[in-house]
Amino acid sequence: MVGNEKSEARPWTGDLFWKFIESLGKTQKRVLGLLVTKRSLSDVQLRKLLNLHDNKELAGVLSGISKQAGANKIAARSVYKIENESKSGEIAKTYAVSLDFLRIANEMNWADESEVDSIANSSAEDLGPTEIDTDEANSS
Image 1: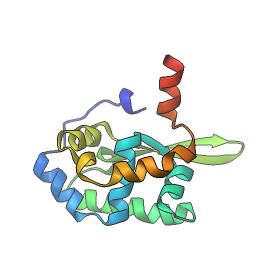
Image 2: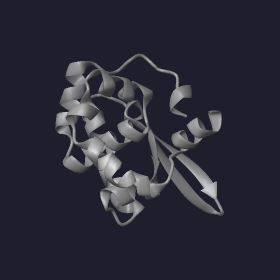
Image 3: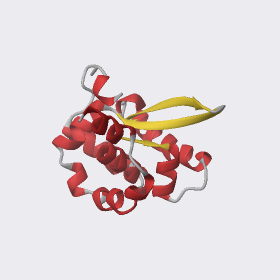
Image 4: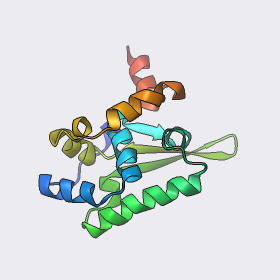
């Protein structure tokens, strides 16, 4: 998952990071802030935190992030990754922050400056543990 990802040539600089962030809408920033804070979230968790009704609405938000990444000559996979898993015949999607994006967001203290910490902490407790939370609990 996030820790096993190999970093390619680092696409991010501080200037490029801020240019990208400033090009995003409020909901797109919230998605990335939540992923930076929680590292990974399922589609169900993201929809609940963002008050979106279905994956079609979520896809619209995510495609906007990908479009802005492309406009800044950044590969979408340098921002976030999508993992699909089949459970009982249904596809479950998990969204994980890219290691490169996590690194630059932390270097820029972005999660501290944005309002994502309060957003993430206010309702994420209701969602149960994320995969990373569960992995950390199992390794203790």
